Length: 402
Image (cartoon, rainbow, N blue to C red; front, side, top):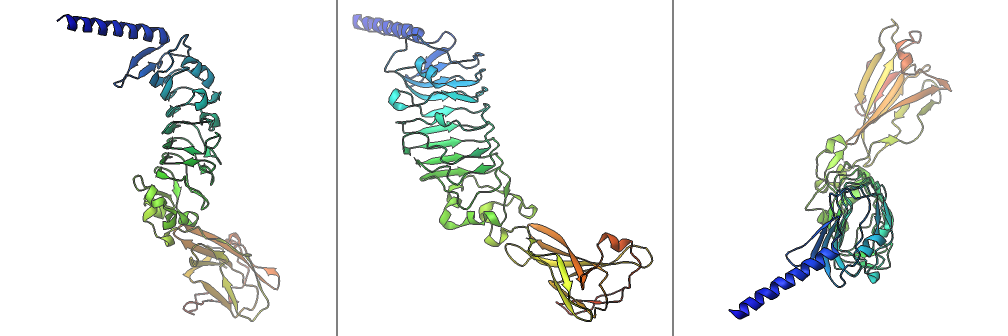
């Protein structure tokens, strides 16, 4: 019984000493406690603080699970001031979320006792990535940066290689809900990142360059909820030797455009479904060398994949001042036959594929004399309309002529 009394006395005494030490260490503006592992938690959140508070005599050799400065009024993260506060202590997580920080001063450096496993800078005011949040030297087995809900617009080249270490294990970069519309091909170069998780959900990404280099040792790429434009420029992404399909399996991204592919998972598409809008290739002017000859018209377009569907619209002026006479047909090539004078008509070709369509208005000239523009077809009743025939080459059937 006496031994039990002594033991209880010792426990109470030790608890009192710990309480005194904690009260001496804990900033007056904050509250301090311990987690289940006995590691300290310094909670300075929701205090209306405008700067990091200092501690007069921190106890060396201890470990802090978390320092929480979230939901304050900070505009600057002063690394030097922070570690003056906790010098001699090992810190796992630094939480500076829900502030207005857009400036970071000082450097993290494990050789100076300034290191971390998790840095939470979500919901701040960053428009660019502060390179000095990457430790000059990092000695931990995890490296997590939460940069969600900021105003970052791009991931730049060698973005995480500002430190002296060439190896950062357990790397996670969480950048959900930013304004990111570009990822540089060499964002993850210059440093070896292992077990990498890259979270870029809810941004503004529409494409990635074929020269994009994934982090080595990548574990997961989270690209969903971006407005991906699934045209021919993104076709490379499904190549099996790029392994991106494996890295996105848990969070597959969908196409936003073109409309024909909206909502389709990118990695379920076939190569030929990645199409680019047809575009003009060559001159719109067509010179007919002389009358009484047949003249073939082709649409000066190309596309990827090739061979879009071609259709034609031809307008002839109406001699009664009414609406122009219009002829529509599908044919890759048409022929003007029995030409006697300038073909007073307006010609438009339309090229269509899954990405959309493009209209091209041709300028047809006989011996250098220009024909009519499409708007003129409504108001020019003076021309003769029986000076040629339209022959679609596909079926060689003569179309109606005025």
